[in-house]
Image 1 (tube, one colour):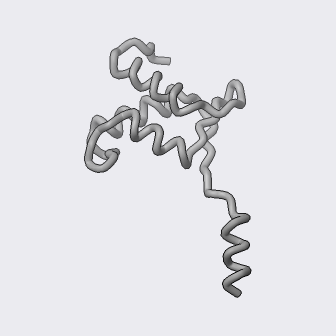
Image 2 (cartoon, rainbow, N blue to C red):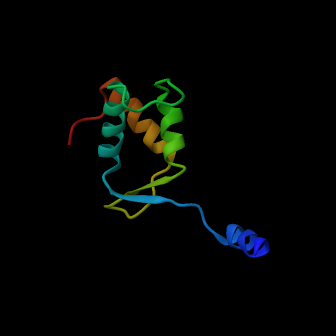
Length: 89
């Protein structure tokens, strides 16, 4: 039985969640949650660390292109939002 459990563990893929939508909206929501103090990484508001950690389990799929956004692209969006350089849609 233990051998069977170990084989099952090897074959299981990690759980991932896919979000289909506008990645800029996701970035805005994350910024808002972090600014409100509702989203933290080890008690800190480290934006890039939070996003990189989230993208390990959540795939943000751009609905217009069908491509998965990289964590670095989302981090760039967050930087633009925080600097006021990303226009509202």
